[in-house]
Amino acid sequence: MRRNPLLCALFLPLALTANAADSALDERLMHGAEAMQPKAIAWRQDIHQHPELGNQEYRTAALVAEHLRRLGMEVQTGVGTTGVVGLLNGGKPGPVVALRADMDALPVLEATGLPFASEVRQQYLGEERPVMHACGHDAHVAILMATAELLASVKDELPGSVKFIFQPAEEGPSNYAYDGERHFGARQMVEAGVMKNPQVDAVFGLHVSSAMPTGLIGYRSGPVMASSGDLHIRVQGKQTHGAQPWDGVDPITTSAQIINGLQTVVSRQTNIMPAPAVVTIGTINGGTRHNIIPEEVVMTGTVRTFGDDVQQQVNERVERTAKGIAEAAGASAEVKIIDSYLTTTNNPELTERMVPTLRRAAQDRVMVSPMVTGSEDFSFYANQAPGLFVFLGVTPMEQMGKAAPNHSPGFMVDDAALVTGIRTLSMLATDYLQQSKLGN
Image 1: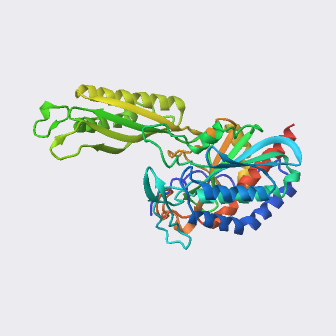
Image 2: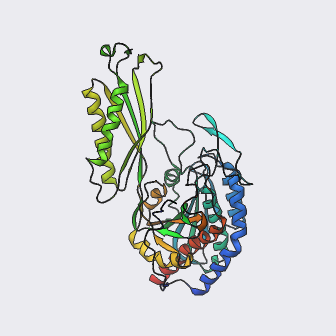
Image 3: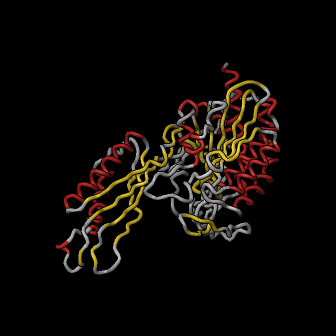
């Protein structure tokens, strides 16, 4: 059985910490979350059976919009393509808190064997592909829909407003040129003004994780998820007969040398003591025939770091290394790195303030999580207002170490975890509003 680093992380003390939240309201939210669990499960399984790729979430968006309208909210649709935003105005004046869920699925062929498994196929990069909620966004939508209904039931007691953000394309749009700029869903939503009118004072989100047991909440202050850059390298050589390589310039051997050279960007050229960094080449394509040295080779990959300064340094060194090796071989290299995701950073003050809320919502099953080299476009919201992004475990304890990871064909969500997600988002919103009222 493989060791799980998350389970080896530091668990927080079990003692409850005093919180400014109204205890009567707190009790109502706890019981209300339990009552919402069956609805959330039904929504989650329905959305799982009908997944949609980035910027194609028409059915999911319609389901969400109809639900929010029934709750009496001000609802905007078509935000940043298919996004939906609902505004719940409380009975008293106060700040605005935003809660976010992502709606899109992945081009993955499901292999779970569930009775509600996906059989959907959609266009992805010009080809029809199988589609699956292999990252748990179906759970995110269901949790936030349930949270919206729960908070709407207590809106007269809320000193402020809650903005519900259901965004498209967290995994990226389903059609784009790989070496062109990609606008992820959160960026589209921010550019459409979702963090304004009214101005958002704090934003919260969560992500399910198969690496954590059901109902466990993980959080971290400061950088928590890596930035991500799409790396595209085009190596230009000179085509010739494979039997006479001296008459041309071989971009294939040059590309091999570049790949080896890029391994030194992190291992020898970057100070990784403050935080890790990753440079990975994921594809390499070139050539048409066994005895022809081709004109060019194209490689793609990813760059992951935990800070803008480090990202800039790594990007510069990747470009310098690739171009230098190519020039030494008599070839040339065109390097393009598109920063798709920013570093997701939890605001330290907001995090410290809300830890007691996380403890109560998860019934003391809370841990400090390690940095994650995966990326999240929640970072775009957290760059506009103080943000807190947490992880929710969705794997039964007996399956720990055996559960399929996020993004895999066998990824599964334990529906028993949904109630913890509902409690977490609803209590983060109400506690923040209540504390802000007391602070004034």
